[in-house]
Structures are given as structure tokens and as C-alpha cells.
Image (tube, rainbow, N blue to C red; front, side, top):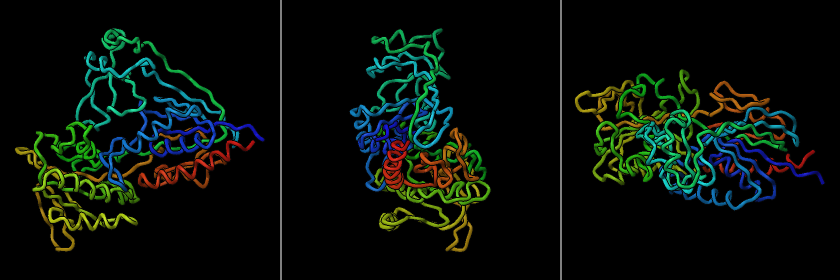
Length: 418
């Protein structure tokens, strides 16, 4: 029998984690490479996800535990693949591991965070609040050890975090490392990025404080978010009682993203329920081109549509401006079914920004072909290399998991071919 070679998974989001644990539990060794300090990807930033509408950390925690207890899984965070060469059953891979400045002695005591004098925008919360340069994203993060942001940390000239640590867990002189591995197959699972709102001039271009993205809305509604789950508008902390959702913010537009981003309609319908459940006297208005709720999600659409506090308006938004005195958002839009143009004022507006594959801006090294939009052309991949989830097309979490489970079988087969 041929020697069983390892499987490399690039990306530690839900797709990558699923592919990794399913592969390892079938008896193959797995290496996970994740560019962020923590696993979970976009899913861990959600308040709730479909189809169960439960907090994502439930499902993530199960996979984290499966990783912790499986000796066949090795992982690197803050790491990127620099090169891939070879063929099915014999791929040579070079991995660059950037320093975390925190070792495995960390117990998560938070002393480094309290001592750190440097405040930075909190990327996990999409800039809605600030964090320290020594941080952990939330109390269920994995791996559960702090990270020092090397871009903003003052280094050994400050070292207050190292002085505060009682466990000798912080070493500010850590250097990048290079790791070379040989694997039988490679799973590409590097996920997606939200579309850049600064390119959407007529929708505020990211310059109006109370116009936020759908992912920012997830963080506002999340108990571990910047407002502890209270939906408050960024400019003044006012409770949001009158909100608008703008669909296809960048999607289905030849000037931006020519494709449907698949998840946006469901995200806005879901987020309307966040507001309605929190503030029973609130009103939500969704401006759409077409409402798309695939398969079994149609029933959820009917439920939201029947809520008297939710209005669905078919029509494109022409312009969004700000009332400088109040911070309210003024929107000009068409109402196709009523046959007129309308002007409305809202406490806050949420843009359903599109889904962009991470490979649009950051190509994975190797002989990989991409579409004009940056998606991996799966049919053209070399044998032994597989793409999953949102790298191939916009999909939701459930479809990403199904895809990753199927690819686990293929990756095992490839790793056992000589």
C-alpha cells in the first residue's frame, strides 16, 4: 500500500475547518494554514447563521474541540503559503509563519491587554470600536491565546505587555519562520471578503457614519460585539428604530460585481428580525431588485414579509446623503410597484455588500486559473488540488460545509496516490 501523505488545507474558516476535521478523522494527517491569528473566518463574526439561526460559535466550538483532540492535525496561524509545486501525491509547499509574539504558555489572563498603551481599530468588529495592540477577538476564540499586532506594537521600546505577563508568554523578538512540507493533496479554502463600500459613491462611499455594511450589522447585533448586542447607531449610540436595508450594494452591477452574491437577501431578512425582536416598535424597510431566497429559505421570507413592521420595496436606491444636524440618513429611491420616486429618512442604513473571493486580491501561489472576478476555476485545477466554498462561487455556510465534506474524500484519495 502506498504511503499515506498529508493533506494541506489553506484557510481556517468554516469550509477549511470542516475539510480538515473530516479528513483527519478518516485517518489522514492534516496541516491547516490560516493567515489570521484565529480560526473561524467570516462565520465567527456573525450573530446568527442559517439554517438554524443559532450563534455560530456553537458549531465552531465543536470543530475547535475536534482539532484540539486530534493528534493528526497540525496548524499554523498568521501563516501564508509562499509556493506550491509538484503533482498529485507529491506537492512541495513552502509556508511563511509570521510571529505572534505570544507562545503556548499564554493562559488568556488579559494582563497584556490591560498593560498595552496602544489602541487600534478593531478589525474583528469592522472598525466599530477599538482594541489594544495586544488582544484576543472574543472569549471563545481559537487558539485561545493572545496576539500582539506587529504593525502597531512599539516593540521592545515599550514592552509593557511583556512586563505584565507572569507566565513568560510574550517574546517581542520573535521572527518570521519558514516551514517546508510535502503533502499529497491541497484544499483551497481561503474564504471571502466583503465588497469595498468606498467604491459605492451613490450609497455614501463609506463616508456616512450611520450607513454601515451587513457584516457590521452582524457585529452590532452580536452579544460579543462592540455594543454587547444592542443595535445602536455608530454616530451617537441612539437606539435604531427606523432602518433601511439596501440590497445588491455592488452586486449584479457590471461596474462592480457582475454576479449575484447569493447570501445578501437572506442576510437582510435575518437582520430585519434582529431589529424587530430587539425593538418591537421599530420599522424596517428593504429596498430590493429581486428577493432571492433559495430552496427551503422561502418560508423564512414569508415569515418576515408578513411582519407588519417590515416593508419590502422593489426599486433601486439612487442616492444616500446625511442630515448633518441629526446624523439621520436621507435616501432617494424608486418604488417600482408604486411607479414613483420617493425620499425617506432613516436612523440607519445597512448596505448588503457583495461577496468577493479572497483570491481576487490575493492569489494562491501555484498553477491555478481564475475567472475575471477572481473565483478559482475548479475544473482547471491540477489533480490533487481542490477548491471549496466561496472560492468557486458565492454560497452560504450550509453549502460550504457540504462542499468541504465532499472534498475531504477526494483529498484523501489524492494523498494516497503515488
